[in-house]
Image 1 (spheres, rainbow, N blue to C red):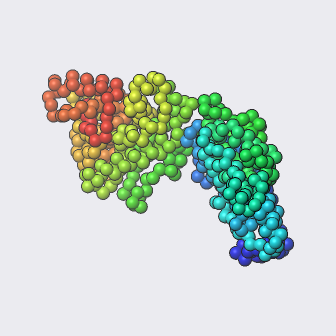
Image 2 (cartoon, rainbow, N blue to C red):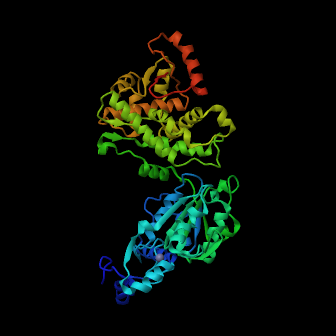
Length: 508
Ligand SMILES: [Zn+2]
């Protein structure tokens, strides 16, 4: 059988097809994608590796849309992997596609639609050169913005080209093709479709409906072969723009995406996307499960919080960037203490505030509180939740009593593991509590310190002990002076006085 490296001309292609038609099928993009999907379904292959949590919801609907040969739209809030899904569709294209070499719209050598190719093939016949287009080059994506023009999208008449070649302006040869014709015989994705001006949506509709383009009033017949896919944020249907009815009507399927339904799914997505394997040395770095859970829980809490605008959503990117920042704070601590082992702590999540606050829009009530305070409350609620899951049945009275009797700890998010453990060992029963996290006695100091930090932060989040971050405050002060100061400090923390990374923390 001829391989694509030996098929270089139209004649080669004709002969190869005659010898084995099934190896070089001719079909529309929608049929090609459908056939390849069917083959994957038969073989039981994972359809879209890396798309997590959609197996029972979005993927079946997507499969049905492709099997139906529909153009389709994904509707969902930000950070729901919409663009990622569209890009993954390219994996359903053939690995290589024969095109007329040099044709801007990737004409089929056996049935060219542009007049330049038709003229060329008439002149050169079977000697016409062909090229093989790899599948990655056949997915074209455009983010819709209000300033996208017809010329960008469909094309423009090039008067200079017309003058030079002595052609009428209406001649197809004078067209400078836009993105859409250049995506011919591939998949064209438009993100945020409602942001596209109405007249351009009309242009898209004409392509879908009639295979016609109108450029500057000149009608050009161009029966493009495309799978068109779109994304939109449901909020934008009303808020910013809309999808014109005739175009909406031509979009075969409307598929709704969603945020991860479970914390487990969310953690898998974050683990896949976040940059955690730093310096290529994974053995030095550890982000314990409870830290990952806290980070993930923040997004879940935020999506349910009345102070946060639900219609604009809370992207999964919140958890991803937060976890990266958490690890960076742990990295910074290890560097400043010259520690070899980097183990993230729950305390690091508070230091990751800058990666959280930009990821949500606030409602009026949230605006009054300020993004930092809202984020800090989210973290505290998340820690409380995760801590309750791990320590719900554990008797912690001994440790709480120790603090109630006036005991105190002075730490900061840059305390070395040694420092933190030395203090923790002074609290009866505290280090022992970490056994519930399956941190064995053989665990590294850094891992043990992280577990102790989680217990302290958990008790604080559940308001069983208090924590202040008052500058210059020292645990060595006599109890009668410390008491009132601490209470004042506790009130401040509850009301959300900023707690930037690096500041001292005081538990009692
Ligand atoms: Zn052509």
